[in-house]
Length: 412
Image (cartoon, rainbow, N blue to C red; front, side, top):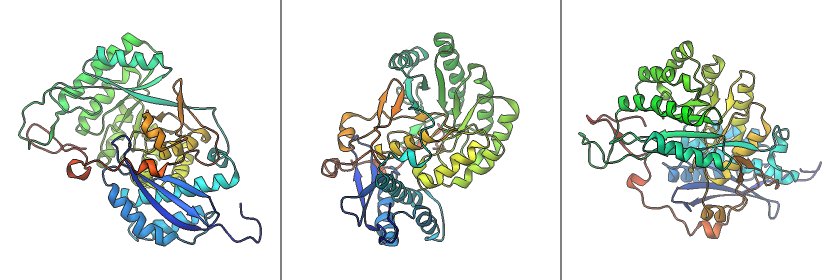
């Protein structure tokens, strides 16, 4: 840290690095400082709109923060949050997250310790994670769950394809003909809500209680069917049921809570930490399912976790492949330090991604392990990252269009 009377270490440059080593478009921010060789990294990945985030960083965040003291993380976050007058939203939040996580990385490097130490030190030795098992039938899903269990995983998300439909988390077969444009995907909720309880019943009978099962609805069904589904899966003792409702329909959580005890995770689509307040205050959800960069980084996520601690709500930070290894490291350091940790979603990065991001956290026996290096512990090979430009993508990366048989757009 800066000695008394010494000039502060300041931000001298903010770089945006765009790379897709696994075909997934990632946005990483690199903050350089007035101390030679000292820099920090942060995740700003909004994979559906990465170029908008890059513009926000380069044209608005960078000029706003140049010359500022790197130690004043809270002050910088608050000033930047209100600098656009209209606040929140995924573009602004991800741009802020890239800067915010990089500043925390810098602070911990200056302290010479892993970031979790600045959050109060370890509350656990490693971070339990869940991975994803899917298949075309209950038997196929069971086989994949067993394969993960043999690798030491105790928490596994299970998804099953619905024949003829575009099922979230699992690929189906030939699509049912529909009144849709040729480029869209087809979905109907009723076959799905009947299939999920059958899948979970099969898995519980086959696997017993030695594995924690999770399932993601991904907000694709009408709210009243969501209520029915939460009650129908209650006997199979899920670790949690995720995104049962769209953000626009969260009042339905009151009905679910009054009628069953299925644990609920919510918030992957939230872009403002305040969206969580009523759900957590009324204890209508059990897990905070936030994409940390979509609410502005570690600074607001730490506060959200602390709020949940007093209400019995646990963490389950979003951790798919479109969170960069830098973002996964940020998740992990927060996981290690908070007492109300629940579970961490994991993306098993291939070797090519690990080469671009040396220091990517290791996975062993179903746990994420910190490498104990100062800061986030992850670096980026910029020359290698440049060899993986963004791939061409329909509509420049938009979320795939999904419609019902009659052509109605489905969320999401």
